[in-house]
Amino acid sequence: MSSQVRLRLLPSARCLFDDLLQVKVSGLRSRQVVALKASSTDDKGVEFRSSATYRADGLGELDLHRDPSLSGSYVGVEPMGLLWSMKADTLHQRFQKTNSLKPNVVRFSVHEVEGRGQGEGRTLAELVAERLMMADGVQRRPVKDGNVRGVLFTPPGPGPYPAVLDLYTFGGGLSEKRAALLAGRGFVVMTVALYGIDDMPKNISEIHLDYFEEAIEFLKKQDKVGSKRVGLTSLSKSGDLVLSIASFLPNIDATVWINGCSANTVFPLYYKKKQILSVLPFDVSKVVSTESGAFITKNAIPDPAAEENRASLIPIQQASGRFLFVASEDDNNWDSPAFVDEMTQRLRHHGKDNFEVLICRGSGHYLEPPYGPYCASSFHGFLGKPVVWGGQAKSHAAAEVQLWKKIQEFLRAHLSCDSTQEKAKL
Image 1 (cartoon, rainbow, N blue to C red):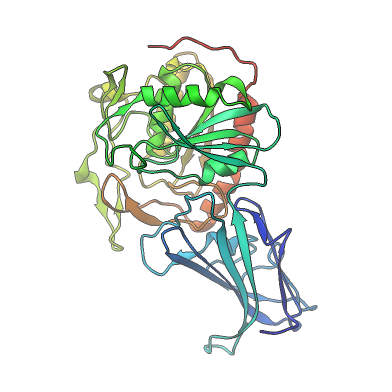
Image 2: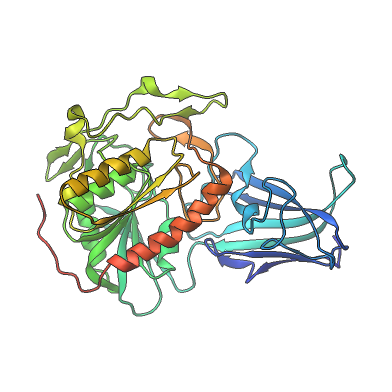
């Protein structure tokens, strides 16, 4: 490595996962062309990598907030491009970062670029970044209370703070990333599992709202929680779960629905040992295969509002809280924008305007906290095969930044610390 070349990450190489970083290089020759690389290994041991070519300015300096990538994993001025453009060497891999206790370790490096067609030369500088899931002072506590299994994240300080129940994805087990990061932004957040951990069943065939009711009651009792009403966050299948919770259970002030469905999917839904929603059918014959070996499932879900599907349609008009409906324009998992249209029309028909809509242009299904690798395709838990999630890496990354800010603004605006309780709506 060159003793003159310096690679820096500002404000610090130790930061939060959702912090915007400034990547700078100094000590290069005037107008020198170099390759910048990034690599990271996820919780499953899969390595993701990116590379981009840059030309230094007249002073031999690079600033990724200012200077464009000339070629590589992305082109143009993209301050966080080295992170969101990382890919695995094998197809259909999604970057798995579910454990909040371990930071996301990213290795950045600067390399000489030889003459045309000769590839890269020696390494000029290297730096390792640690991107933390939990901010300083955030407390993480495993929850095993009654039937509830999950993890509770509490911000530092006395509070009071608004409370959020985070339902991440359909798969068994826990994903702590979003809950931990939200706690660092001033929310008491609990993420819960449906199955697959501790003494819970390995698989399930039905879902009971009673479980979420118990989880909400537990969350409301936490010392730093300042309200008796909570917020809900979701993604994909859990989108219909949060709609049902907001529609059938009391004390929900704010519901974030991200690329879900407006009807109940996958499993029948029960409350007080009685089935309250059937399952919207899935038409396997409408699943389309692609050359990559992944499938497109967008058209496999029928119209939820059709008469024959009414028994699965979630009565969101019963909800008293506010909704944030988020749909990716290029969602290939299912037609999220169409579901948003159906829900907003139905709410207006009932004289309600308790919703906001965010359509994310050019993005795919998996909208997560920002600055992680874009996932084009990966294994689908219900289908049992890899699927194409949709979107383009650059626009998807921009949508995640926009959405992350919007989620926090929405929850802060609508989670009050002095709300009154309601009686259950069933």
